[in-house]
Image 1 (cartoon, rainbow, N blue to C red):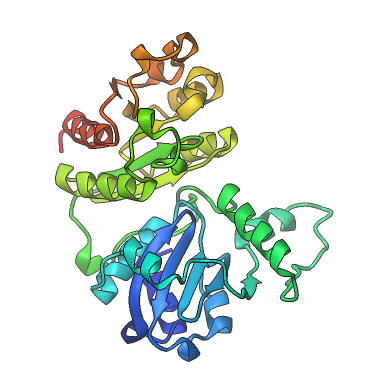
Image 2 (image 1 turned 180 degrees about the vertical axis):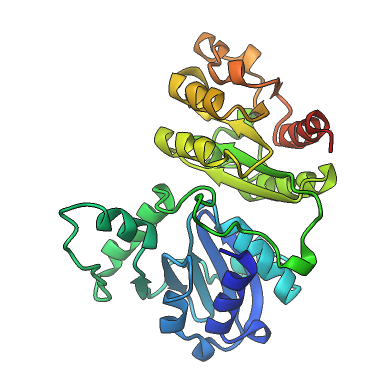
Length: 317
């Protein structure tokens, strides 16, 4: 599935790029501020490919829900199509991201439908509940943020999230950045240990470093669930040239992540924001390290830049 085609469908649904005044991403949501909210076609938006749902915020704001492996790529395409860089401050200033009267439409997830279709018991029709009260809506949106319902990386039978033919980098090397539990809370979680830089800032750094290192594409994936991380590693086989991984606490507990990494055999760099050797005894064990050619630890989010450059050098880019 082409990121530019998805972004174009979203832009058409929100009234065209001329109607977009600001954009950003938050967790699994693409945030858009519009000049004229009456131009937003919610039915068209809900039917756009890859869209899991949307939430209206304030008078001019709308948040479009994607899976975590897609939202960064679609946002990047939206920025290129509109010429408007992402701005977290714009949403803080307008207050559009604050609690407001909410209307939610959750579209059918094609991945879930495909899975149900393969089951003998899959007879139920998808249900759309537009009459949900505010509490249940907030719970649903929180659930979408916490549970990654979409595939973390393009599945084997999907079109890759690549740029249009005319804009493709001739280099085929793509890089996958995998982050484990609680990394999405950067800037909030124990800033004396993990720093004050936000998860959004880390994503920007990874994309900038990937471009600097010569990668044709960078996908960032984060989940709090071990199985999702294993799926991301497995899905990277045949799609990405290498992986940068910060498994979070699963570093010290997950043999399953190590097995997945060994199975795909991709070049891999282990990254940790804090300096593990100066921390608790239980953090001195790293299972994933046995599948990595390098470990970067204690450099804050700048460790991702070093990992990106070192991975590129290892691949001969």
